[in-house]
Image 1 (cartoon, one colour):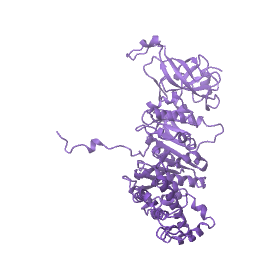
Image 2: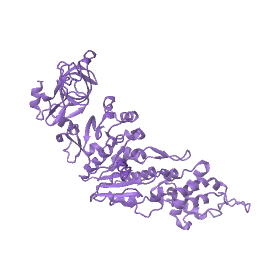
Image 3: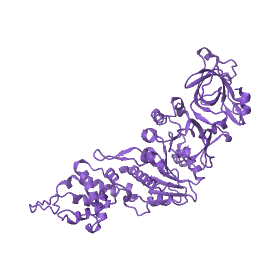
Image 4: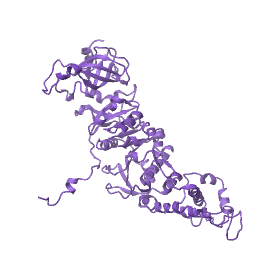
Length: 586
């Protein structure tokens, strides 16, 4: 093929411009190539078509003019031979004969005819092949250029950021690329994670979307409009103007939730509590045998209870962990379970198999369990569950699935941390969403659930040694929700606290600055598309700058996220204002 002049004629975009020429290859290896820098001695970069180009700076995307196709790469190192290092001084003047070398990480191949970009190297370059800085517009178009051949035209795009300050280099991503295989927004405090989450929500609200936001701290309360609805559990410090209180009825909880809550210990408390829950399910199904809401067993006949248990379909429901029961009667029922099953009575010294006997001493072993149950049922942390008459959040979610609203924000900042209330409540909400998805409710209207501060809710184990419960609702959504039209977007500053099993299910990672080495290691292991060379940029990303990585982004793309119009209210206290003396001391 001919050299760059013909290529410029072939591509109306002007992909290989002489103004962007930066050097020629001097070494070729399997994973990276080296090149001699043409403008290594220049004291600064250059400006072209409104954008700044480093022309050989670390982090810059470059195009290598190969013999068969173009190769896309990224500069990862610039250095001088040892003998030349003293030729650089602080005068900032050009050193024309500076012998600098650069290393380029090979990222993908660019088709000559369609500009379609694919990961991997189709044909390796040769020594002497020319290297050009990649135009910002081309880099910004990478998400669309990495689309498979024959993909339909994108009518819904999320405009998230830009390659540089020039507006023509803005990056737009299809929602199926961002959310289709789940998404995670990662970054340390101050890296821009909250701004990115807010920007994504803003872009989604421009379309006919369905987003459920679990707001852990209340920082996204600024969203408003006719298509936005706000609900809150508990008593948050800050609420949105139109936020409505709601409850989470105990009927949404399953047996494992209550076991995690009440933490029965030892060989007596666990069996007695499970037996009490089974009896209360029967009391709910057959209220005639439980006039007080629980089944009396102390010195009572068994016939009526046995008859109800043997009815068709009842026995299966009694062992169904999702079957409803009145948890407020749990303490009373536990006491009734502490009886002799053979009708033994120490007062009469007789046994009657047709009856339950008198009380045993087991109830004394259950006193600590009873105390914990009473503490939980009356705790402010669970007031939205056990002591609230507000409308059910589950009803609001069900309505949201069928109405025209686009964003349902659920504020969890009013749910306390005691008794692991936040983790359990969020897990119950996640399980309700998964059950609705399995029933087909989201097939025609896909839902994205955004979980803020996800490290508080995913992969958690709660309970004591004798009663350990795993809060796995969102983990199950990550594993199977996609096929039911339910996708998850996690936002967290502690990726190491998210299990690798969950993080590996995230098809797209939007990674802000990560300074902790363990966090970067987790990202590397979870995403096979990133290596040490790419992850080495993560600690040095500017605030608001993010690397987009994933199965649909095999070539890591670094962009500057546009500031959201509705900025999250995540600022800390203003010490200058609150600590200032009035009047100031002289």
